[in-house]
Amino acid sequence: MTTDPGANSGTNPGASPDITAAPTPGVPTPGVPSVPPAGRAGRAGRGTIGITLAVLAVVFIAVNLRPGATALGPVLAEVSASLQINGTVAGVITALPGLMFGLVGFVAVSLGRRAGLSLTIALSLIVMVLGLLLRPFAPSIWVFIPFTALALAGMAVGNVLVPAWIKRHGGGRTVALMTLYSMFLTVGGSAGSGLASPLAEAAGTTLSAGDPTEGWRWSLGFWGLAAVVPLVLWLLVARRTGHDFPGTPPQDEPDRPLRSSPTAVFLMVLFGVQSMNAYVQFGWLPQMYRDAGLDANLAGALLSVVAALGVVGGLVMPTVIDRSRTLAPWMIGFGIATAGGWAGMLLAPAAGGLWWAVLLGLGGFAFPTAIALIPARSRQPHVTARLSGFVQPYGYIVAAVGPMTVGLIHAATGNWTLVLILLACSGLVMALAGLRVSARVYVDDEITVQRG
Image 1: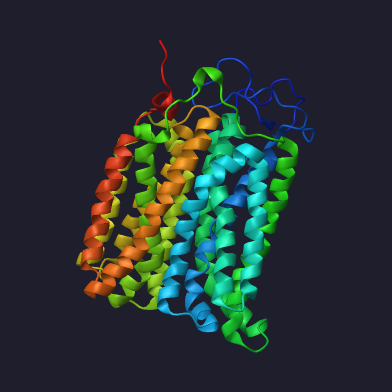
Image 2 (image 1 turned 180 degrees about the vertical axis):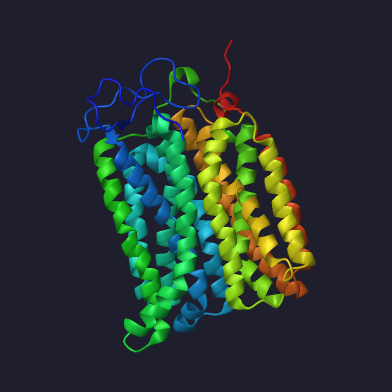
């Protein structure tokens, strides 16, 4: 965790530092905008927010950007029975998160440019809360799907803009805020899937008017109530910061599209392939274990091992990125771990189940790495916003294809052999993409035309 050397300059002892919305004029520190001296605690004016509010805003939005998506899978059978949907429609529902994260993510930066980062994030939370609170009341699948898509659209905007917001306002605490963001993003996703069934069972016996099969409605609605907390925080943040979309310095104006940056393209591949692996793990890994002869509870526990290691990765990797000259050994390790985990599932899924879960969890460190590399591989906040709006939407579209393809192959072959071979090969692709973004190269330099 880095600290801002000027955080207490010119302040009274004990004053809490502010995180500012604009860098100090002058030569910027590479990769991190500098921060002017802070004011007295509790007196952050328009354009500034206190460090406590910044931390709370980042933590609470991170926790709430995933449960609305991950809580659905564990109760999908109950939803299907209640709303009378078939397997094809259920497959569409499971593909919605990746598709919405990708499609809506493409417009997130444009929305942020119009309204400002903070206000756009706050508005996206309003959309997310509405979708999450309304979908439990859906009388049919044709109402349930639009409300689910509405909630996912709000999450998609947050996915793209929060890393850019951290780069814009983080100053010397960018690494610390990215550490909190990536860690609690994983915590929230794991909580959504882990609590879904227990909440549904508890609500079914106490709150569903004698119909225990309707407990899923309370389980999904819980996350809409939980998301009210970050909504309030971000409305306060937006009031403090005003229009905070970063301007483009004339001397550094990028002339080339991001697809001309090898770092941006390979970072998108890294993000997409790892996200695809994560969706496959959450959607299909328990079934793979169960088909190998393990019971449902043990299969769920092994998936929890994968998720828990993802939390560790979110805690560790932003600091590793900040302090390492190259991430090449880590990227090779992520690829080997992922390939080894899937190969193990092919050769001895039951006998070595725990070991394969650990390897897949370690390979999953690539996800918080890719998230943290978005601000780390860009100097200027406006480039960070563009990079996030490129890497995540395209990456999530790649990720959405994974679970659907796995289901089609498994249905056609009747076994997991070809699926596991292809997933093991994805570890090689992930390592190669990771090697290309492992050095300290900045996207700003690759997209800016050098004039003579």
